[in-house]
Image (cartoon, rainbow, N blue to C red; front, side):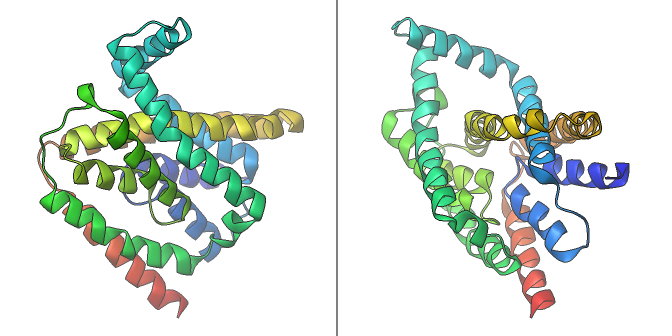
Length: 265
């Protein structure tokens, strides 16, 4: 595997993981429309580990707050941090259960096609626009209750469809429930931490079992590059959410979907 290949995959993963355009959809497209080899479980895990590191560092205060909340939960101590940690856990459960069911049934592999990515990119752009255009901005993450957390978590299940975008469906749900763009984006990124972590753990055994120094070196390089690209993308996206709407991402998704349909027709 060449440096150019690793650089390309890390750039795509890092730049698209946390914005509403679907990183998995873009990665699948690279392999569906080129002769580049499949990145493999190990490199896939490394890319996700890099983006996990980026979001944890960028939201280091929130990360520390959630870790403290987890400790409070284990000690059975009530605190605002424990409440927020519980909400993140509650919103994570649906997608983990759905992913396990799809993997067991084989449907997860069947969904990975250019047609699915194209249509998902277009279809999910519509509710994203409507939620952003007409959603209220009167809720705060500091007072997030179980019901909206669970609803956002249920929306996250849709992210298992390549092209739907995990950040897209969670931001859409949060905006529809009354959170402003910055709060919706922040919660979406915090919610990504346990999801990415669980995915990385599942694939880590395969990477370690390989034991190939070259593969480990490629994985380390991919993780480092993905972390840099993701950190830059998060910073730019959070600044954008303070000044503009999600319309540019909606337009991009629709254009991408239409372009893909024309290419594969």
